Amino acid sequence: MLWKLQPIQIQPEVIFTIFGFPITNTLIGTWISIIFLFLVFFLGTRRRDLIPSGMQNVVEWIVEYLLNLTESVAGTVKARKFFPLVATFFIFILFCNLLDIFPGVDTIGTVNLEALKLAHLSAPTSFFLLGEYSNKLTPWVRPGTSDLNLTLALALVSVIVTQIFGFYTLGAKQHLSKYFNFKAFRHGFQGPIEFFVGLIELVTEISRILSFSFRLFGNIFAGSAVLAVFAWLLPFVSDAVFIPLELFVGFVQALIFALLTLVFLEIATTSEEDVEEVTEKEAFKEYEQHKAEEEAVAAS
Amino acid sequence: MNKKPPPSVWESLALVGQLGFTIAVPLVLGTILGNYLDGITHQKILFLLLGLLLGLIVGIYGAYRLFSRFF
Figure (spheres, chains in turn red, blue):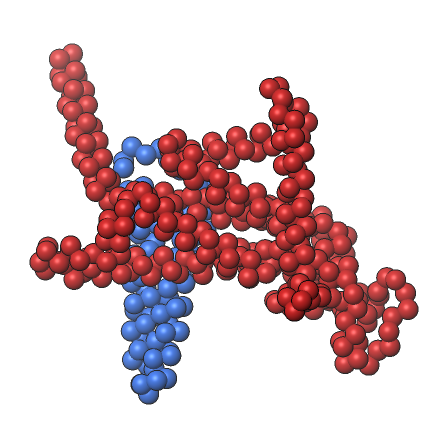
């Protein structure tokens, strides 16, 4: 057997430690993504010409596309506030995800000597590892988002910033009354139910930390596992199928994370009173328009 | 909110992706909490069922809330 299936391990491997702080392979992957991101945007914004060319063109296109997307969800005024956070989420997660498909990621590393001992093998003699040795590898680099710690941190940032924006735009009293709706008790019989609905809202906010972090982690981790498993089952052919798929998944997951953050920011900064007022006004306008049309038909 | 333009393809995709999690995560959390309470209070399945029901209510409300902007 030329190749053996790589061990699929959820937790990242510790490569080395600095002053007792463990440096894992996903952390190295994250740093590679950050450096690459920095290079792209440094080269793009180094010389800001009025007529862009080369890298500046690419960066401007990315920023403009993201700004349009933000404006289509949040409207032009709020979009300017939300744009830095949402665009950073998108670009950073995209670069982390795309690290998955580069050759060498997940496949270049040191030989795990303890695993060799367990399998009763002596140390390898050649540079390339084949046969029994090929699954005793500790990869040096793994994509950053295949580590639950990073995605959990991103989800926490997303949820906490949503709350901060809610407090900032609605004020503490109105924002908290979304979750602890004591005013509802004035409504008599329906009061306890409305109060309970507010508490449910609080639970959904908290469960969003889980859903955000697990979706991103699960998709990217499963993606790298699929690439590893199918490179073993069906070499060369499978890459042609699964690498484009991973490209697509990486892009979509980054976009979904950014857009959902944006949608929840939009929900958190919209007060319920505003919504009712707008709906009533619009309904009245619609009614008037409808009436005018009917009159026009009747007149003709 | 009737006059809001229809969401873009990507926004719809994101919302649909979130829908499953919105229903599933509270269900799982409620079940785990109920199971834990059963262990403490030596009940058979009372709190498990209550947690399941609560999780279901939270999930359905969350799903409604997610799409209520478009109604």
